[in-house]
Length: 239
Image 1 (cartoon, rainbow, N blue to C red):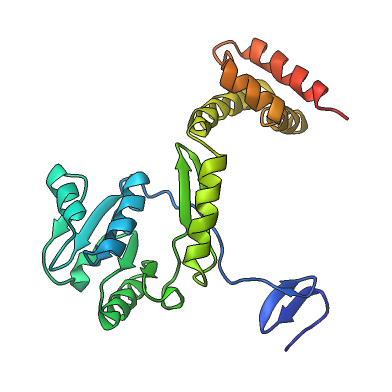
Image 2: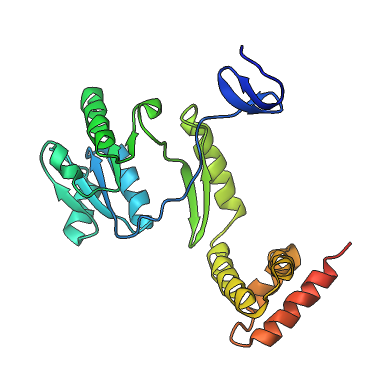
């Protein structure tokens, strides 16, 4: 064990905070609407990858000699593009992300290597460590997105926690997120002071505010009225 102090320390060769080793993954949300994402494989795993990409608005290309019924249905509906053949390196032309999801580990490694050589991040379904990123279990409520990952160590655990989150955060959170987006725009436009903006936006997400927004959506078309309501909420939340 290579440990060097607590700040900027190394634990098992990794950076640490307070002597605790940090995982190597960095969580992000990619904006991939309209961007090409290529999936090698046509089975259940490829289907799950395609479903998540469609939710994010991606341009999905699936390439495999055989495909699941749902993938074929999506292709017939025009939701995805599908090529019934072996994957080729040229399929990666113009791609933003690559997903290796065949039932052949050698093909998956080759495809990921081809993607990496072109600077395209690749996910390897059967071996997360062999790829550039892993895909988490996701709960999506409109623009409200919850992602859970065990960094490839326990997908079943991630799925379990995601199911629990789905029960806790229902469909109403899609509406709430849309409301908060409008509230944020109104605050940014009407409040020049950064500290005051932070105070009001914090007040907009309290339990009291959430109950208020869901029962009676704010009058975002009346900025002054909205700002008054936010200031009242901010004052009421003071200890």
